[in-house]
Image 1: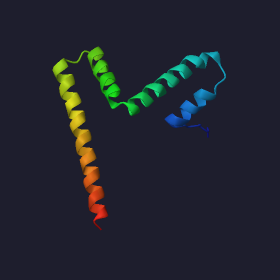
Image 2: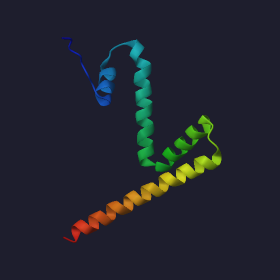
Image 3: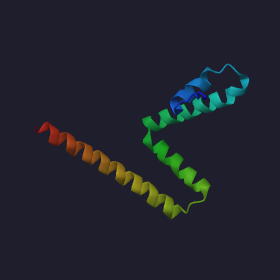
Length: 94
């Protein structure tokens, strides 16, 4: 029987970070850039929306479709937040 090592995404990123090779350096820099962008999006959600919009434009989606998609995402977030608040209110009533 052959043993196989497995790792999840987080573990793979940690393994890549620990590789002391010049060949791994571009990937490490990419990981750092993606992490930096994610932190910016957390601090300013509009940055994430702009990134998504640019991505869809590059992919060739029509402007109307992009606007509709972004509105749908915003509505879904509002509904999720409202349902979370109402659930908390219902629990605190007990």
